[in-house]
Length: 422
Ligand code: SF4
Image 1 (cartoon, protein in one colour):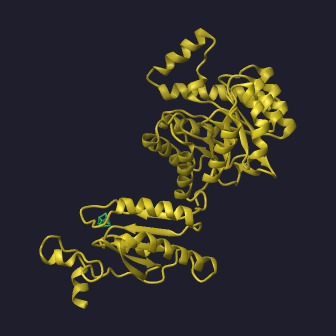
Image 2 (image 1 turned 90 degrees about the vertical axis):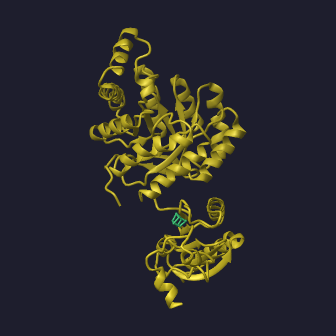
Image 3 (image 1 turned 60 degrees about the vertical axis):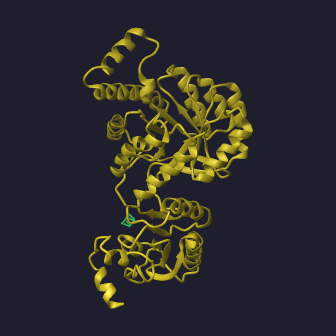
């Protein structure tokens, strides 16, 4: 496990929805935000259920209007995950959300600046033991009301040291804002410093992590469509998390927020910051050696295994004997394909050789059997039982040596010996 930066711990939630801790020695949590209108109670409850089922530890909702905070009174009793109210322009929304039973407040220092108003929110949170996230997003920290100040700040944004300029503004505004909280003896704070610019995110969170010990909520804001937003988000988040920075994560795509949760979880699993839930699927990218429809097979396998397998079984779906045996050796359950067929291995032991149309069913069946064995203590995840030797591609997979013999495919090292021995 990588070394994580020590932060203060905050917690949100209650016995009914569950308590989620952020910072300290708590696992990195995953959060997301509903995409619909909060005042549509039925749709919001359904969306929160969907996001929680996908693995979100915390769900945030926007409360731009009074009808949204009113809706919270009906929404919160129906959900089983801590809810954060995102307050942007009016402190009154924060007070209403707190009264409605929300579990955390997000304030934007760029928009709620009046000290007396911030103090009111702090006092209300204090009374109910709720934490507050201070979000200093790039898009909202530049001065809006004071024209002269705005021109000065914007001038620097277009200067040579864009990052340096933004960082200086972010840190200065954050310090100024934090002082209001410290003056009120309030420390249950998380900080975020998001930007759509991945390199600015790295710089901002790194700087903030050196200066403050509050837990950090990581995210790249407005990352765009999932197709490009994935890399835009994961590149800085992986860098920060691998450096030990970050206590909770929100990925933001212009798409269904379920993808945000799935990708954030996968990131944490890959960095071993959370124990994996469900199957760990690896698959080959295919190449000119492929003789089955592997892309369709992989998607079908992914869907089925997610629905039916709960343990983190490592499953390899490989297109041929070139890399198949190597990956299969490292997997609990593996299939490598040949000419319209596939051989299935369970911890190195060959258990089936089936035609292409039966691969999915057979693989699922063997995954289920293996999971049952693990659950009953007869098998252990990640244990190599048998060393896999590549099958004879002519006899078992119906491909390979005939083509090699005919000079259509290059000879692979080691395979000649196997032919002789059979
Ligand atoms: S496993 Fe076989 S089909 Fe898949 S990429 Fe590797 S060589 Fe190509």
